[in-house]
Length: 248
Image (tube, rainbow, N blue to C red; front, side, top):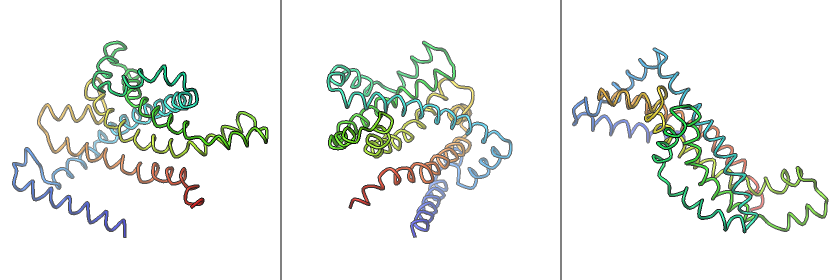
């Protein structure tokens, strides 16, 4: 039933799109079939697959950097209140720093390189991960730590059996919001300073006002991200929070 509902919803969206395209000039809003033809053409030429792969590589790289760095810092700040008090103004500053400013400064300081692009995306996400994981560290139940002391668990066992199970829901929340934010920023990074990727292609077709190609690349990438959400992020989130249903 959920799959049928989703399919009906998407078909309804396509129908509305087709009706709107019939009332607008095709150059401004091409109909779904025209966008589909462009998408197939780009896929057949290999351009679509190449640029999607480059964008996905940047999304994955920036995501891993942001999650690892943000999780470590967030847990440390949540456990040590003096460090949290000292670095909290820094965190507020980076949370409110516009993504565009970070991207532009990264390109100016480090050049139009892959490292600068991925780093700029990661920096935009790290503060959000820190905030989420800090709250998770603050919510740790001290009784489990006492139990670990009683049973003389080593550092690795303490992390594996005490910290990780309690932090998993917060990590899952940071992960889901992270992917949603990162892929959007990656497109801006590619538009401003990369010579490949979906963002670069959108900018290229924007210059010649090819709306059909812009929509084709956009829809293809959104479809990939939806598949990642459905078949990777949501299953991991259910796995991370499975203990809640058991305890209930």
